[in-house]
Length: 480
Ligand SMILES: Cc1ncc(COP(=O)(O)O)c(C=O)c1O
Image (cartoon, rainbow, N blue to C red):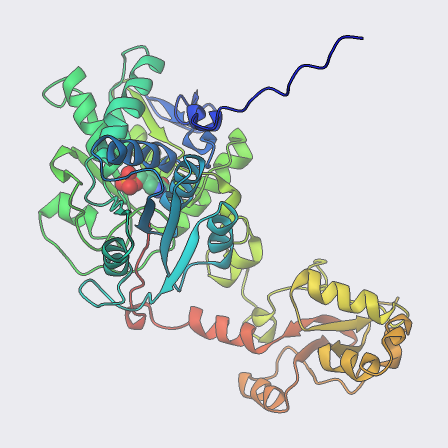
């Protein structure tokens, strides 16, 4: 038998190979939409290892900082973001062995925070209700941290020239080659402005004198559309599309490169992204919808055949509990159910449509508990085999039964549920709901013997928010 050879040594000075998979994303043609006289192509940036176009700038900004001596071995990468840039930085800087600290405004979803933490980033939560100049404004916190932490490097994607350079050197040339040097228009969104500036510079060089149109698709509520059209800086509104749209003109965004602009509202953006998944099987984020809707509008307005490119800037994975969730879409008013003009309009999950999580009287308390946890609710209606709501069980009912003797988890639900139901007919008034809530209960809506669904405090609040006059809603800011 031959002697066993020593284990191969691992070269620790080489970064993980995953970084070489950033960029060189595929480009596909849209075939299932009406594109008028044009052919429309999508650059699939959702296929980057971190799931978005921001992997490119993360790599470029970190490598530039290394070359310029702003980031040294053992250093700390600091950025103010909870969006894709944070994911890209956590991936790239983590892979290269740097510490990563992300300053994240407190309105960002737990999913996003968990995602960057899973990638190894440290998270500092700061306030989302303060603006530039306030000591707790997320960008100011990041700037200060970089001064306090030895070896700290503040990335600052909004002012970092290596951001547009990534697109000028990689995204642009890739599109040019993939389109066989035949492009008439590129449709982009602006978050930091890196994509616009980088692609605009590249395409102006390969086809000078605006030979390739740079088209902006901007969410309604952002100030950029108006700025391009009139040169005026207007007050911003709010929008739900993530990653693009701004309430200021970022330092690196060269808006003079834009030749045409479209304003797309949230509803059209979400509808376009969902349609893209259904028709073409492409799973993009919410801004993909804005860009696609803008590109389709541009295409359908043309009278000559043109070759148009836009992007799928990030993956739809992050939007499963938002844009791709029908309940969220209905709750936010983006999907419209035919109104009945009564209490049934407040039921977010309808029993008849199989949307209500229920439990049977003979199911065990353990089953009830697991169902509550899995669906993140604190009570379940108890429905018998004939579909009648005969009770309700909540966490307190469970606790009363099991706190002394956990084996009671095996007991049937019927032994712990409340059968004194607070039922209302659909034609009851909103004020009747308040009485039920005051007694600490949820409302069961019954049409005669027919169980329609539950109404909770949250359902009522969501309903009232949807009916708030748009002009009285304060603008919400976007954090890319
Ligand atoms: C989710 C998302 N992030 C970022 C960007 C690009 O923004 P920028 O390069 O302007 O930061 C886009 C552009 O379309 C986007 O959709």
